[in-house]
Length: 68
Image (tube, rainbow, N blue to C red; front, side, top):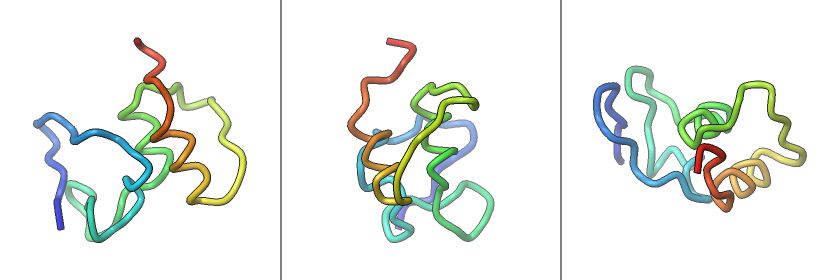
């Protein structure tokens, strides 16, 4: 398990970022949501992802971060 830290660098957001056994929310006992992963990647909150939860994590994890 890896709990993310509020004031630290995020690990690479990849297609596995939604797995609770790999990435845990910094202050809550749960995995990250796809929206939280998208924010870390730099997607604006209004950006739409289509598909199942795992498909959304795949889209986010396979994307080049928008700020680049």
